[in-house]
Amino acid sequence: MLNTLQKRYFFFMLLAVGGSLLLMSVLVLWSVDRNFGAYLSDQQEQQVEETAASIERAYEETGSLSAVPPMLSGSGHEHVMVTVYDEDEEPISGPGAGMHGMMAGDEEAEELTYELTSDGEVIGYLGVQFPGGYGSDERAFLTELVLQMLLVFVLLTLAAAVVSYAAANRLTAGLRDIGRRVSGLKETTALTETPAYNVQELDELAAGVRALSDHLQREEERRRRFIGDVTHELRTPLAALRSQVEAFQDGVMEPTEPRLAATHAELMRLVRLVQEMERLFEAEGSPALQLERIQADVLLAETAASQEPMFQQKQLVLHTELEPVTLEAESDRLRQIVLNLLHNAWKFTPEGKQVMLRLFEEEGEAVIQVEDEGPGLEAGGQELVFDRFYQADPARTGSREGLGLGLSIAAAFTKAHGGTLQAENRPDGGARFILRLPAAETDAS
Image (cartoon, rainbow, N blue to C red; front, side):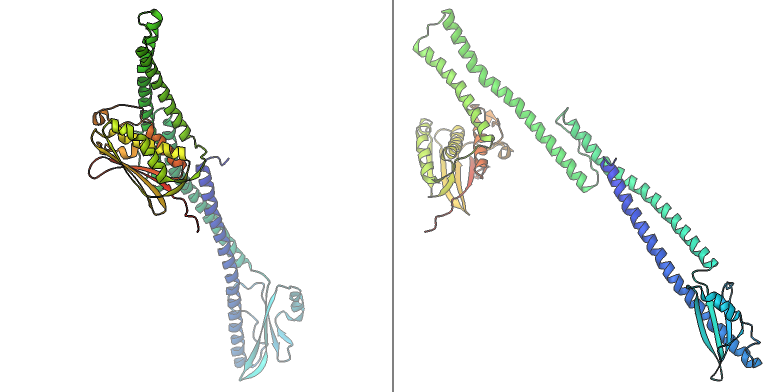
């Protein structure tokens, strides 16, 4: 029944308001009943005192109590019995002992007795018995009050129901609208507008949906670009392989050693492409790392030395500044991260320039920096450079080598190690990649 947020909000809001009104009504009636009874008792006592005073005045005028009619002042006393007694407590006027005995059976009856005095001497007593409970006038008043309270309760409950329904509809209207927009993302990844609901939580939710839409749109663009890049990278070597193999089969070309070497080069290009994609899928699949205690400066020095021939071939200088740092990592994965960063620097650094590899410890972290003297990162590249298949503008680099997977692999392996990888532009030109990994705790001596 309460299967929607609107129904639940309406029900619980109505329950809260109705319960509050009911509790308030019960408290009001209890307070009225309690105070009304006290008020009646005060009124009865006051009337008895006034009657006693009038009897005393009549006695002073006539000299006898029997001449005074036992009438209670005021109205509405049809069931009240008043008896006047002499100083010996014998009834001299009023219903007398017989009526008094009849009333004595009423356990709820309230009897008030006052001394009658004249010149300081007791001349008799005045006894008044009020019936138990409320009289007809009091009951009529309380009945009318209850009916009025019930009417007010019903009217306020209806008003609360209308307000609750309007509020629930207003609140959930925004949620329904956002739900429709989210469902629409199945058809298109773009949202044309972000409506304002003037409710903080709804506006934040709408902003989150818009951010999701923008992310999906970027992912869709990258997917399309990836398909185009893979198609391009596969088409060239496959076309070359196909033409060469068909030429060998048709006898158009002899399978000489140079031609076989060219065919093998195209084949290896395909193999490298597949291997690079396999590494990416492995890195993004939360790989199980075999952590070990590593002397990072030694590992980085060996890695840099292995890349010297490649840098020298391009007439680049690879500098290293390595401080002794120990950390826990998987050596092969850490070497892969550094190799990808060095290869990225080698790729974008012009001939005759230099690349810097640094290692130092800072605030309990091992920091590895790779700096180049290339064109630097384009606008927005700091956030996009680690995305899969992202490539810098070829007009800036003069190259379109690879699929742009190396930095994505490095970022994924860094995350698996519990570290961070950031990119920024250097003030004097070029790019700087900063890798931070938790440093190993120093052994207690």
